[in-house]
Amino acid sequence: MFDLRPLALAALFALAPGIAVAAETWDDKLFNPKPADGDVVLPLPCGGAMAFRKLSVPGDSVYADYAVTIGIQDEARGFAEGARTAHVAGSFSDGKTQRYVLMAKYEVTEAQYEAVMAGGDCPAKPSMAKRLPKTELSWIDSVNFADRYSQWLRKNAAAKLPKEDGEMGYARLPTEVEWEFAARGGIKASPAEFNERLFPMPEGMARYVWFAGSQSANGKPQLTGLLQPNPLGLHDILGNVDEIALEPFRLSRLDRLHGQVGAFVVRGGNYLTAEADMRASYRQEVPFYDGDAPRRSKTTGLRIVVAAPVLTSADRLRAAQAGWSKLGAVSAPDNKPTEAKASDDPLEELALLAKSSPDTATKTRLQNLQTSLRANIAARDEQRDRAAKASLRLGAFLGRKLADDSRAVDALAKLYKARVDGGNADDPRTKAFKDQLDREQAVMDGNLRYYADSLIRTAEDYGPEVLKRQMQILLVELQGMGLGELKPYLDRNFAHVSAYQKDRKVARSQWLADWNKMQ
Image 1 (tube, rainbow, N blue to C red):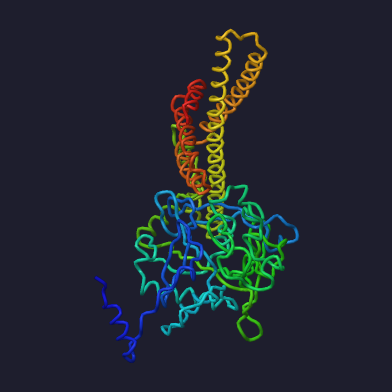
Image 2: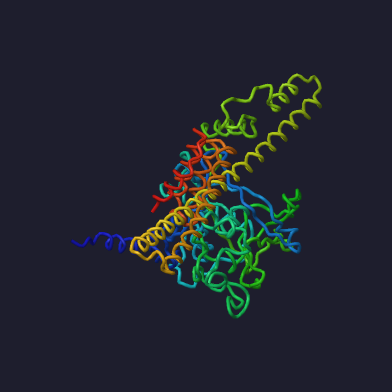
């Protein structure tokens, strides 16, 4: 039976003075015009909503982060966008091997901004024209928007917010590293694609980016979500309007940022940026003030993320303290049977010297030296981990090639045998089959030698724990790039490496037979 109570209540509220009518829920086209699998939708005041995507990063502990190269190798732009190594990590656990923050799928629209900033007096239900990105925002305006939205979510939609260790998330501006990591495609992009000037655009830039010119934006901002998204499912991450970052501008000083802190940063370019100037590294400083008023521009908008604090509980604090103590620690390689002696540990020696020194200045210098040495050891370990992961990736790809080679050789061998058994041994076509079989056999033998050499080097250079952890990270990366079908090959290669570490037996015939069984 049709329930008339909602209609009666609505009529009562409409007639009764001082009783607010509940805001009408927005149509999906107003906040998520191109829905996709994996979208996370959070409510807004006034019946609105905002769509987000997970910005996922491999990570399994409080100190796990992910090294990426951001910026660009360009002499003309090096002062602001010089290439450097940076690190990104997620706020929320997503299984045992991934962490994430939520990043808004679209730039914040006029309708969304008005709904959050209305303060209880909801504007009329927005029209499609209100799907334009909100512009003429100062950095303070953007921070205030995120703060207002955070408070509203915590009060009205706490159950929908992601949580980490029991702590609710909150909205904020993205950091520069988060923003560029997302703009380049995150773990959905291959390492080579990630380091390109632009994320992959197979249909041409005009299908992904609003830039200057009559063939694109034609001098004005465009409705959000009209174009194709980047590999992470983010729309208009480049072009349309500049997007404000959380931290202030600093110059690039080769492999690090300069110490002087400036005004705020906008990223990504806008509808007045030339097509040739579009790039993931696009980064400009904008003054906080224009005369005596906050600086606001018709080309500047924002995109937000939902994140969480780092130290969410007493347990997390203890985990951070324990993790910090282990950073840069000296130990024997984990594939060796013996541990390093305490007397062989330079960090321990420095700690003892600092503790026993009666001179405060000397003690401080020794402690600084200990910290510097720990940082160098930690950097060395990160390089080792990346190399181990690359070795496992290579083994998986070589294994897949061997699987293909083995099946091709088997098929040719059967054809050749059938012709010989059929009395056609002297036929020229039979000889052609034999020549092709010999060539394919030689290629397979060469690849098998290369696979065996790489496998042995991997097993001898990296310990089981290092390889196990890098395997988990590699699986996350491959899944992110849409290469999850490589998991069986990675598993088989890892099994071969592990077996060799245990018995040191070179088993080429068995390795080839294992690959031949792969479907």
